[in-house]
Image 1: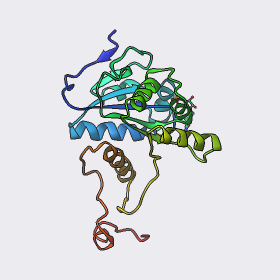
Image 2 (image 1 turned 135 degrees about the vertical axis):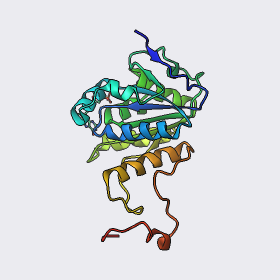
Image 3 (image 1 turned 90 degrees about the vertical axis):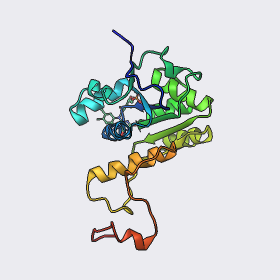
Image 4 (image 1 turned 180 degrees about the vertical axis):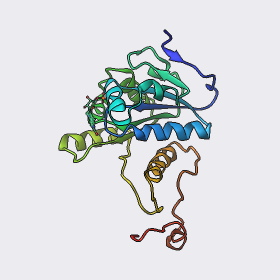
Length: 210
Ligand SMILES: Cc1cc2nc3c(=O)[nH]c(=O)nc-3n(C[C@H](O)[C@H](O)[C@H](O)COP(=O)(O)O)c2cc1C
């Protein structure tokens, strides 16, 4: 059985996407789907063991269904995969959603699977690493680990919804988050209307609460 599935899209800039066992794998589905539609980067996907469980519990999908959304799918135990090496050039990595356990592993350089190793590589190579940390409320341990990864160069980007763009559906909220992630990598998109001032906002904010 092959350990890596190539789609032939490797000439495009590469973006690594890690999915961990925090709630809301829907965030990753939306991002992968948006990237597939944009077709401007090659996606490399790795899914933690716990995420296999949350994916099944929260979406009813199988992890294999997720694998098909990516250009390259890496087995989490394959520490010899391309993304385990700094010599394999990438734009960086987003971990979405990012559990507090994986946050802790990244914060302390504890790379016990391919996902945490790929994140560690991004830090050592000074590449963009975005952690969509999902937990609430946050303990002091969580907050200290967020500080540690930020000091090491990562970007903590929690999935906090905004309402300045007038969302009316869950899809709108997911699109806003995917767009905020893509902004961090300079990947162009039109996933949400950008803030152009209060007057312009009246065009798309139609709700009763502003
Ligand atoms: C349904 C479900 C939801 C979970 N949600 C979260 C969460 O939002 N944040 C979190 O840090 N852990 C959450 N967990 C616990 C993690 O899955 C657990 O800590 C796991 O060891 C994380 O491993 P990983 O980081 O390697 O994926 C959840 C577990 C389950 C079963």
